[in-house]
Length: 357
Image (cartoon, rainbow, N blue to C red):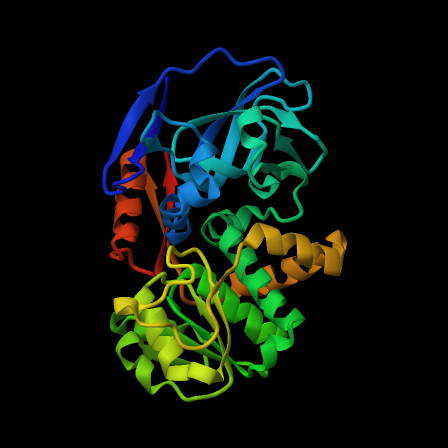
């Protein structure tokens, strides 16, 4: 018997922990038992834009319901694949649940891809699993950090690389909304490392100003209610908040000084702002990490990409220990609770939550 959390796709505040009968394991398949995963704002994004980007399709559920994807660790519980033995540990894209059946293809010492037919239309980025015994990114001492920050960090890395490859569109200031979010912190860190001459300004709620300042990753921190006072410097804006009114306020404050505007993990792509008013400056462009990853790998080579990410990641983990706490919780009901708190903005940004289902 397995369990999964089903979320009402059109009403995400409704979630049920459901028992599921496990089917016989298919030929060539492997059954993973989920050990742990992190619940972050990234998972909320997967749910909010699940229909737009097919995130609901990875782990099927009954009509009208969905299983939110997580990043975490799992153990091979049963195997009909001679290359993967019972007891082996892997890291990758998992359901908010206790079990996942995969069909390993492209197997190497370092990982494999899930060849299940229903997953092939989606980005292969999400179908790849690392085998921890030979995974260069695996560090037993930093498993929690990898679950909490890993995918988000790579998105931040890719955003910085995108802007740097485009010479920051002539800007000398980077403005980030949701500056306390993990992806924003990752972007700020990567910009500080690779583009130190670009000024980093974090926008956040008044209650998070102290935390964002304490991270040491921003040159300046501005509360949302003070956005109108942003200095008119040549800037790029990366929006993680998905709030049309905020986007409109930033665009209005900067107007022609805004050189480029990115939307990351939000629902108001190209929004016209509040009240139907036209949005000043450049229209926001959606940043989709899997697509940009291909461009960055092409520019750096696979080995160069791995080296660059690895170096930036190591320094970020060391930095994050100074401002991030980790909390462990047990059971899928706890996962649903953290998801709900994150959904409504009540999860403390200082605490990363790892759930053991």
